Structures are given as C-alpha cells and as structure tokens.
Amino acid sequence: MVILRFLHTIYKFGRPHTLFGSFFSVFSLYLIVAFQHEIDYATAHTSLFQTNHLFQKGSGFLLLNTILSALACNLFITGLNQWADVEIDKINKPWLPIPAGLLMRKDALTICLVSLFVSLTLAYLGGGFLLGLISIITLIGVAYSLPPIKFKMHHMGAAIAISTVRGLLVNIGFILYFQHYLSGNYTLPSAGIPLILFITAFSIGIAWFKDIPDIKGDRLAGIKTLPLNLSAKGAFLLGTILIAIAYVFMILNYSFAIFSSFSWLGLGFHTFALFLFIYFGQKTDVNNNLNIRKFYKFFWVLFFAEYLAFPFFLL
Image (tube, rainbow, N blue to C red; front, side, top):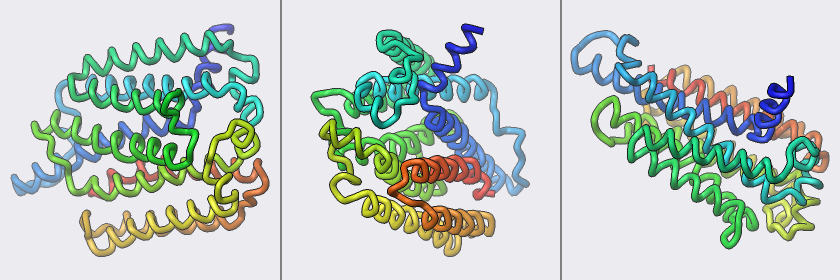
C-alpha cells in the first residue's frame, strides 16, 4: 500500500498531462513514419498498403526504449521545475506533491536525478542520435527552471523554450530518428511538416494559457508572464487567435493538399476541433481560476487528440 501511494505521488509529481503528452507524441511520430514508409513501399511496388511491416524486427524494443527515455526525461524536467519553484507553487498550485507535503524536497531531487540517469541511459542504448536529442531537450529543461538562464522568468523565453522542445525538437527529432531506423536516411517526410507547425503553435499556446491562473504567485516572484504584462484577458485572446489560425492552417492543408494529400478525415477532424476550441473558449471566464484551469485541461485533450488522429490522415 505504501509503495502504491509512493508511485501515485511520483505520477502526480510528473504532471500526468505532460507524461501522456510525451507518450502520445513519441508513439504517434513512430506511426507517422511507419505509415509513410509503408505507403512509399506500396506505391513503389504497385501493391496495397499493409500493416505487416509497421513493426519490423527490433522496432518493438526501439519504440519502447524511446518512449521510456522520453517519459523519464519528462519526469526530470517537470520535477526539477517543481523542485525549483516550491515557494511559488505554495501559492499557485498548493496541491502539488511538494507544497502539499506528500514529497520532501530532497526526495523530489533524488527522483529527478534518478529519472535523468534512466533517461540518458536508455537514450544511450538507443544510439548517438537519440542520446544527443534527449541531452539537448534536458539542457533546455534545466535552463527553463534554473539560474542563470531560467527561461521561465520571462514570457518570451518560456514560450521559446516550450515551443522549441514540444514543437520542434520532439517532432523533428523523433521523426528523423524513426525515419533512419525504418528507411536508413534522415529525410523529413513532407507529411510531417503540418504536425510540426501545428504543435509548435500549440506549444506557444500552452506557454501562455498555463500562466493565466498563476498570476498571483508569479507577480510575487517577479516572473514576467504574458498575463502579467498584457492582462489575463489579453493573453487568453492572443492565445485563442494563434490556435484558431493553426487550426485554419490545418483545414487549408487538407483542403488544398499543401503539404499532405487531400483528406476528408483531416479536414473534418480539424473543423470539428476548431469548433470545440472556440465553443469552450468563449465560455471560459479568464478571471475565474477554476474555469481557466478546466479550459487548460481541455486544451491538453486537443493536444492528445491531434497526435492520436494525425497518423491516420496519411491513409
């Protein structure tokens, strides 16, 4: 029972929505590369698309190892951020494990360091490219939370750090990693470009939306977030416009085959998702912390949905 409680605390310490985000992104990126590989193979051999080559010999270990390395890296980065911001979290997020008294600060640091060791060890087993990718992501995560850089102290630095990791490094890096394994080259499939652009915009939205309910603690800590610089309503409106533009881009992409083939599924999915986003956005009261946190959770659901659905737009 004690072990289960401790594991649940670690799970909460890892911020579950970010852990699920890492899992879905890595798994989806593998499917994108694998589906594209099979489509190219079927085209070259004038045969039908089949799924019997999606998991080649050794690819199961490769995928599992990559997912576990990414999850451990995620735990390290989110955990380090909480370890560094205990006083702020006592005001903004008192339910988190450290301010809630469920986890001692020294134990939290131990979990972070063990997670870092596990992540880098698994990345090393995956090869030099994966180790380099995880190492760069880790360094940006450290720079986000700790001095002397501490990107999170300014909204521009925070947005750049989050969008660089979630939008560019994760998507481009893992696509190239899986592409090399399945096809023997580091060519970026054009079909993956819309996802990279979309998630980059989505990541900037994450950086802006997450700070709206944290104004009180951030103001006391001197963190110059966008809601503090612009106002909660202004930051929410700016984020809403950015994400709406991202959805319109995806709708146009699947309507006019800009980067991808025409797809009724892609067109319909993003039209419906845009409708939901606008619907929930206009019902959100940015001055009500509970309300904005519900919207933020829904925003992550849209993030998961994009990764889950995207591979199937290729078909």
